[in-house]
Amino acid sequence: MRPMYAGIGLLILLGFLSGCGSSRRVAEQSAQGSAQELPTLSPGNYRINVGDVLEFKFQETDQFNQTVTVRPDGRISLPYLGDVVAAGLTPNDLKRRVEEAYSVILRNPEVTVIVHIAANQAVFVVGEVNEPGLQIMQPNMTVLKAIAMAGSFRPSAKRQSVMLLRRGEDGRYRAYRLDLRAGSVSRRPELNVPLEAGDIIYVPTTVIYDIENFMTRVYNSLIPPINAAIQALILYQVTTR
Image (cartoon, rainbow, N blue to C red; front, side, top):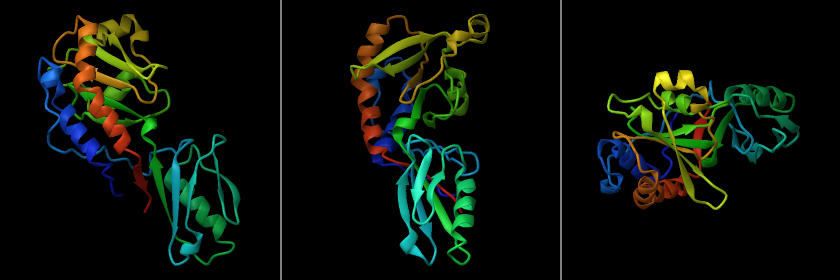
């Protein structure tokens, strides 16, 4: 499988965000930094979601090539097959089903399935984690699960002051401070908040007392490059082989 690099904006963002936690002031961070790869997704463990764009490439019968979007009912429509269930399957599962179905009219069909995952199906984990960047939404995903997927906390992380940024109906982000120390979460499991697509988790190096001041600095230095990255990150690709 080949990882896909989703635009220069995201590469700049990840270089920028990987250093956010190492300074006491977010506003002092430079938007320049070393480019990092997106997390690699295996076609064997990614489950296709509603809204994903699926590209089917047929060897030697390219007239059957199609690009379709998974509908809200979880299905897609393919020529000569009609409606096919796609949501919930892995790309490899769907590849096998499509090849089997087309074998009735094609001789030994070989199909490559490319899953283009929309940026609005992701969350961002930044700051003092080992692998900052984009994480694809998973069922029942929580703040701690997303942090674990991002390589877990660095030793310098202030777990008692993790910030969850969520966009409101007015388009602006609001910040929620979470104490994610093990003792706090064991007493108050509701602190391990369920995530929504588009959420940003920021793990700082210092305790954040003044949320209003933090958000002022965030809007000046963190949100613009993330918004630019979301615009650049039109698609993230998983390809079957």
